[in-house]
Amino acid sequence: MIKNDLFLRALKGETVDRPPVWMMRQAGRYLPEFMEIKHKYDFFTRCQTPELASEITVQPIRRYGMDAAILFSDILVIPQAMNIEVEMKPNFGPYLPNPIRSQKDLDSVIIPDIQDSLGYVMDAIKATKEKLNDEIPLIGFAGSPWTILCYCVQGQGSKNFDKAKELCFTNPVVAHSLLQKITDTTIAYLKAKVEAGVDAVQVFDSWGGMLSPTDYQEFSWQYIQQIIDALKDITPVIAFGKGCWFALNEMSKSGASALGVDWTCSPRNARYLSGGQITLQGNFDPTRLFSPPATIKKMVHKMIDEFGKDRLVVNLGHGILPNIPLDHAKAFIDAVKEYKAS
Ligand SMILES: Cc1c2[nH]c(c1CCC(=O)O)Cc1[nH]c(c(CCC(=O)O)c1C)Cc1[nH]c(c(CCC(=O)O)c1C)Cc1[nH]c(c(C)c1CCC(=O)O)C2
Image 1 (cartoon, rainbow, N blue to C red):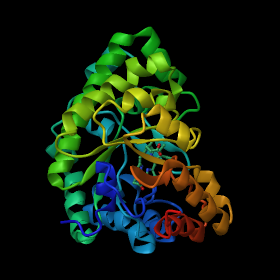
Image 2 (cartoon, rainbow, N blue to C red):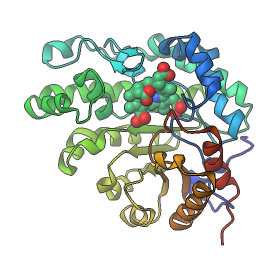
Image 3 (cartoon, rainbow, N blue to C red):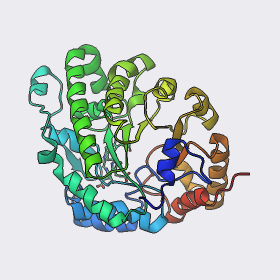
Image 4 (cartoon, rainbow, N blue to C red):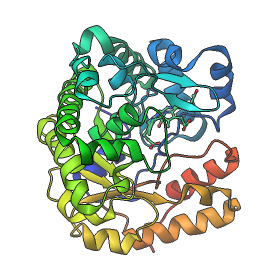
């Protein structure tokens, strides 16, 4: 049904002529057409207005022709729907004025009705699917419960999320019940996204790498596994854990269709740790997009050779940076489209 199904075929592990490509945070501030909309509407207005969210989602596709689109939204719409106030402060990022630090704080956190609180996301999915006209698949996403907890407890971005970790280590009962509430909400949310039309989902565990391997199991992975268990029979699931290469072996047995890897793990090591059978997604250093286009192309081809062209979704190892030149982003996408196995 979808005309370019390269991405879905790679998730199934099928043999392909070249791997598919998209970029994490591809709808964003490096694009002048995004900045034009950003100057007119605040962040959550963009998220909550299906016409704006769908337009922003297709902007990078029009410009570069990636093999998949990712819905414009944010992982923090989940805590917002759970009755936790979330602001997006210009030049600062997320700010949660009433962070969750105790049982009393937790008592006000609800498991929301998805249609009532996040119906606008489903409307944005339907509007985007119309614009995409079955040309390429649409990815839906959510933050991992741990990564969401990081913001709910810390109240803002952080280099080490020390307050979030402190809550886990001093009041694990509260931490685990918050994680479970987020997990239950996320499962219902992602199921609704699939019903609304997304073709795959990605769980972003952007801050999983803040935890030791043992703590990662306890505070992050077991909740991601619940999400995979609940979704894997209705849609392909991609689990991206930044800094989580140490967990690749366990992740490869989870039922996820693909695992995201960042650039600190070599392609060969990622294949080795994940057992060589599962599709991997990554892992170009986003800062490497500052290199000249010819260098980018060479490095991308080398990366594909090292991963092997099959069971691979080419991506960056984390989101694209706001100040990347447009022709450098184009060189990254074109390099994959021009790839020929040698
Ligand atoms: C940790 C995280 C967040 N949001 C997200 C993550 C996980 C991925 C990652 O680790 O990068 C996920 C996200 N956020 C956004 C998308 C859109 C789809 C895409 O382009 O990939 C996605 C997939 C839009 C956004 N979300 C945000 C912007 C920029 C602000 C704006 O547009 O006004 C965009 C385009 C704001 C945001 N949202 C968040 C932060 C830390 C910030 C501020 C810093 C920043 O700007 O990168 C939380």
